[in-house]
Amino acid sequence: MTPSAPVFTWPEGVGRVSFPEIDSTNEEARRQAVAGEAGPLWLRADRQTAGRGRRGRAWASPSGNLMASLLLRPACDPAAAAQISFVAALAVGDLVLAVAPQAPVALKWPNDVLVGGAKIAGILLESGARADGRIDWLAVGIGVNLAYHPADTPYPATHVALHAGADLSPDAALTGLAAAMDRWLGIWDEGRGFAAIRSAWLARAHGLGQSLTARLAERVLEGRFAGLEPDGALVLTDADGQAHTVHGGEVFFNAPAPGSA
Ligand code: BTN
Image (cartoon, rainbow, N blue to C red; front, side, top):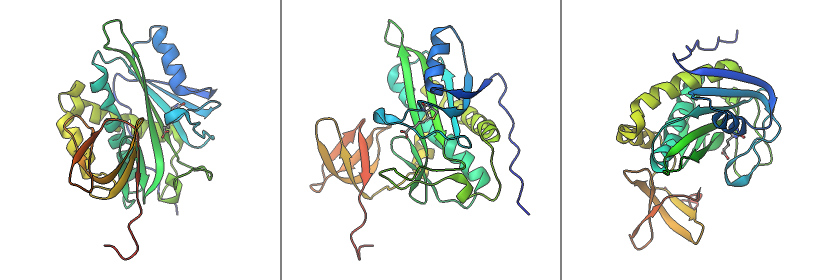
């Protein structure tokens, strides 16, 4: 007998809208913000025809997976808004663990969620700014591979059904995600609680102490993942013991050499 999926409760004061098909829930969040939607509002689509990932990549969006965006209007500065990718990663981790408690969930800097080293979810933050430079609107776009994962990615990928004891519909997954996001956003508290978010994220971090390559816009850095700065930037220590702060870019963990511990 298949165990039943956990029952989640939708958070109070948060809106929800679903679309059978849309270009991109992040794009729809932007349109709704520009039209005056005050948020918080979750937007979910059964399918996206132009789902987007980070770095201009497409995001495979088949029916059965969770594609959703949370529209927020935090009047904070862009650096504080960027911290919400850690908040979202923790929430996605909670969702996966709720249906797959034994799954080796880990969070990869800056905003991927892995199970057993394979990507199960990605997060894309997009925002608009006010004239004074503060955030006008923020779309927290989250794609969770529930029923499928793409076969053609340059990194290993997986999906929730391979790890969970119960099926999780996209709608139920959104309720679980919204509840978890609401909890972690409360802890984040418009940035005042980022230290607690950072510690919780580090406790689930993928690859702490491991060898990595960081591809930045202007150069490539090699070293070890030493931790996070108080603002969430990645700290990489190179072979000379020099610490480098990585604010953006892509990081790749290098496979351990054969025979190494
Ligand atoms: C990544 O890992 O590259 C981020 C993927 C983000 C995908 C989600 S799916 C819902 C939302 N709408 C989009 O077009 N993208 C995000």
